[in-house]
Length: 345
Ligand SMILES: O=C(O)CCC(=O)C(=O)O
Image (cartoon, rainbow, N blue to C red; front, side):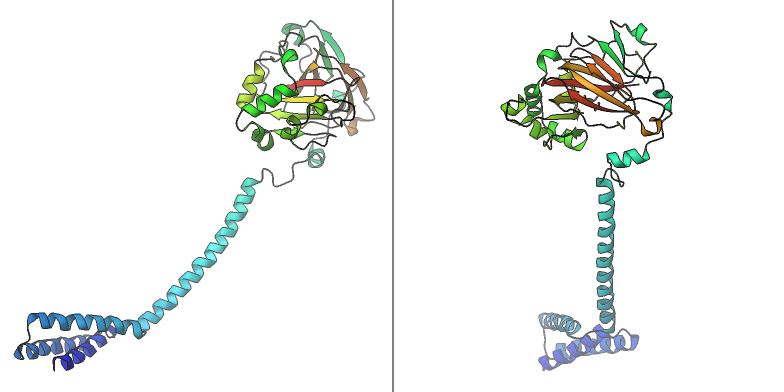
């Protein structure tokens, strides 16, 4: 009997789960009171009543799982729709994120190379090269004396201006090998923030340059000749280098100089003919060896200006506006050439 009543009550409650109207609620309430009275009359205890109540809850839950209520159908539909939209949004945003990351990870959307620089550079005013047929050679200059020439676009050589630099006794391929090997992140800084120029050499990175064999480093017979340049921008590398050279003493006091520099070193054919895309004028201290520089005016000035060559020896400083003079270098007489270059302006 109790079981039969339980079944009946359970049936009513299951309906309650699925129907919300007031009439149903009233019927169920009445049934509930009736059942309680019946149970109590049949000497059921409160524990029995609690059991009935538990049984009803279990059945009601089962019912809700087995039978799909319209609200549930709507919920399932909404859930699927929501999941689909979220997934679509995820795909879309991950696509957008990919594009954002690509744009942020790419330093320039337009490729950064000589061809692009050449076609986008401003046309030069030929005044910079008119009447210039040779480099101006200066020596024993004070800062005051140099003021007059400071921002000239005529190539200039200041003789014997770096002879006192300790760099001439210290700098070598082996010095830079030790320096770069001893500073964490030094190689990466060249690769990621600075620049490596291999010119005609088969060396693809500074790491390759600094790990070449001693025979090749010395350009011994049978070894491939090499000439490279790279920009130093790692602060620790620069700090160490600065112990061995100074900015040329004659440059104007108020001239700006970046806390970066370039090293060019190697043998035989040096830099290939090119223009620099930098913000200021260039100075270069020739620390070891002698070089020939070839300078050529920009093509738009080719009919009013001349190309010419000049020589620079160890100890000299060369000053050149490498933004308007195309330039190439050649190391003399199988010597080893090593220079420090930076900007001023
Ligand atoms: O020193 C060299 O051989 C080349 C220097 C150069 O090309 C530059 O400073 O732009």
